[in-house]
Image (cartoon, rainbow, N blue to C red):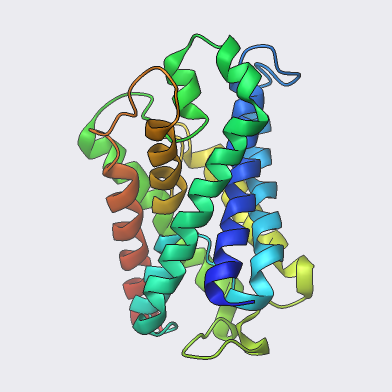
Length: 245
């Protein structure tokens, strides 16, 4: 499996299950309607686990342009591979979002809340404040990337051909720490912006939301924050990790 295909599939599962749990909680008439933030954050954590298990052996399972850029800045990934990773992440995110709409189509039709329907695709702030919202995404992604460096350690060193050294250890069990990391970020730092911490996770589904026959805007005026914030956070984490070493 190529890097591109692995990242498409891994990110597709991430978004299908991650945005899927949001749809289950938010949309009208679902079995999980109004089940709350704990369900959403748990679903997203397990979605990360599934995505990493699928893509990990073939691409290292970045599933996130912020991870890809952070690894490249830290010298753990060749910059020549970055476009392929990001292309796979964006395509996978868009495909996953489309599948969420297909799966919950009847419930999207039954739901009048336009902001709730957008939440099944992309993030939005609880309180709109450009500086605070950007800071939230920077800090949340900084935590994600910085801790990932310590979870992965020296094995996550992709400079060319993919081989066994790029895998997170212990097979599928090796994906559990990353899932727990995303879970605690959601529980602790997700209340302000919905913790995008992943440009593809937000932008890809937002594009699909704009294309699909759904009422309501896609909040493009906010869309740059969950893209730029995670990239800044990833760069800071990579530079600090490098300085500490």
